[in-house]
Amino acid sequence: MVGEPGMSDMPASSGAADRAALPDQATADRATADRATADRATAGQDAAEGQGAAEGQGAADIHLRDYRPGDEAAIVAVIATVQRGAWGDGEQWHWKHAERPGFRSEEVVLAVAGEQVIGCFHGAVLPMKLEDGLVVPMSFDGDYAVLPEYRKRDVAVQAHDLTDERLRARNVVFRGGFTSRELNERLYHRRFGYVFVPGVTTQYRKILGPGPLAPRVAALGEALVARPAVRRALARPFTIGLAITEFPPCTLVLDARGFRLERGSAPAGAIDAEVRFPYRLLAALGNGGPPPAGAFFRALLAGHLSLRARLAAWPRLLGLALALLRR
Image (cartoon, rainbow, N blue to C red; front, side, top):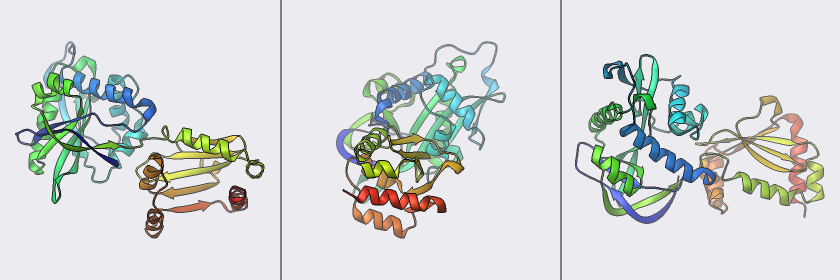
């Protein structure tokens, strides 16, 4: 993540794992940031308060269990239902959670009725710096969602209490999430005891997909293909697979009409080259500035920065490089 220091309200309260509610932070994809923030708040509110109850079924029919490989589709279906289809897909879920360093299956608790996943509750234990030399573990609550017909049955409260017990066992001393002061007072403080207290925190922005970068790539391509040498070098499109740590698979397509950054991997036979580089370099580019030169050298030495191309693609790749260097 890219941190930008700023003053805000920061959490804490007394309890088994102190509960905290952090103010809204910038989200990754600028094009959907407002909607995603609103959807997360709605999901949390619906999960805890709920409206309506399942008819003809008792609370005993619902039990809690941890995430298992293969649950991705069911989890995303619940989130997409509550958040009106705006959340993402199984690939994004797996990248965001299961591929996160330090991920534990117990950090994703599922509510199950029979064999159907009807609710999900995400968390992540991460280090939080209170001051120089004082770093403590904090659990950040994530996507909470319960299907409409199963609400108002304390499913969210049971999941919250279960994770509280586990956090105590792990000596996690803070628990919190991102929300507004108004929603915290109306919901989270009343139901779970979360409070705001003055303090200093960090604004986070994580690029979750190609959305924020695609317009910049297109603008760069428009400028470069104005050169006749570049257009000649790209008479046949050149497809590059991008393998970026902590980032979903993407494809960069270069042709004489322009450049396109697309989500997802192209078929193996359609890829001319593959570029692998670390997320920190992408984050620097996303902030509008070039990454420090030292970051490139460190990535090279660590083997995190590499370029591979099909044998037949090398002449075209070298020709394109010369065209780009030519004024």
